[in-house]
Amino acid sequence: MKQNGFFGRWGGAFIPEILHETFEQLKISFQKAKEDPKFWLEYQELMSTYSCRPTPLTYAENLTRHFGGAKIYIKREDLNHTGAHKANNVMGQGLLVKRMGKKRVIAETGAGQHGMATATMAAKFGFACTIYMGEVDVLRQRPNVFWMEKMGATVVPVKDGSRTLKDAINEAFRDWVTNIDSTHYVLGTACGPAPFPEMVSWFQSIIGQEAQKQIVVQHGKPPARVYACVGGGSNAMGIFQGFLDNDEVELIGVEAGGKGLSTGRHAARLCGRDASPGVAQGYKTMFLQDSDGQMLETHSVAAGLDYVGVSPILADLAEKGRVRFESATDDEVMAALDLTMRMEGIIPALESTHGFVQAFKEAPLLSRDDAIIINQSGRGDKDIFTIAHAFNDPSWKEFIIARGREYEK
Image 1 (spheres, rainbow, N blue to C red):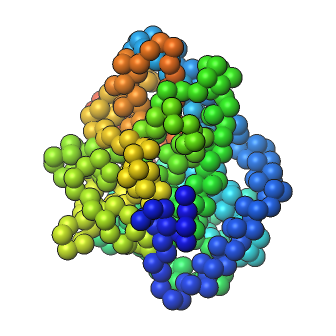
Image 2 (tube, one colour; image 1 turned 30 degrees about the horizontal axis):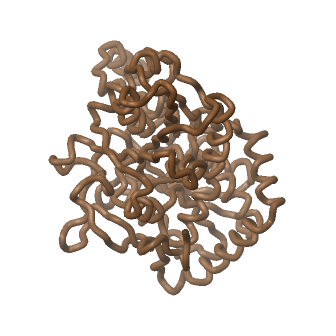
């Protein structure tokens, strides 16, 4: 799949000369880790004792009965420590940081889950930690910011540009250039310069390895389709890798349709018409950009999906036709979230719920002998402010007003 950091025509490492030696060190450390069976065993042991691996594969009996058609299974990455799949990647990178002898980590975050996971890892391993987060995301993901700070991380609100994820990534790279000797950048998704796309995907592949075995045990055969939301692409790459070699399993990535693909207020790179090939933030992929190469504003109800680019690995798989890409609008996401909560007692993150939307559309079209898997990449606790606002919940508004008055006393 990979050749010199490229996946087909996507990827690469377009980096300033000052970072060349740092990236070479990272590539060598990562390659040695991949070739060392003891490293993966150490990683699995860490994730089984510190996190919640293997995470369950839950049969959604009520949703299956509601839609008819295929049996619906949910891969429960929300039960991972810190509440999302992000822990898989950061704990793996934490082990690499120890091998490289560095003492400080930095990260970017959008939905806050990656920042939360990085702060957790830094606390466990004793690293200094700085998290860059767009000012807009700081406001809508305040609970995660609170916990990051309580675990000792410094959270820096980024006020440049659209004040969201892409701007946080830019600021993190600026920090890294200034502090390359002591600092490792824990990139949170399968994007950026090589070896990050491959490395993040490798750590996240534990999701697909587990799901591939679990579905055969529970259903007796592989699934017909696997669904995952796609922002940068780490959770999708994680579960897809368990099924990539089986051409009979269709893989579906679901992007943020926002207010609709025709409105320009979305973050659909691979299923929309507003993206084009470009080079930014150290790699080549499909970016939402204008004819001059200026990045467009993005929108999603889910903070973790409003990134302007996408994993070069997914861009390659899309071009080859191995992964099909769809989109889900904000309204569809809220409806699917409401249904899932009421019927299964499960609260998926707004990001993850994008995958549920497409699965719900397609499950009735399949046979009852088929099964589908939805990757629930995170839990919805972090989204309580956004969800309550979207549902226009009057009791929640009363609570916020009352609590504000209480704090003013």
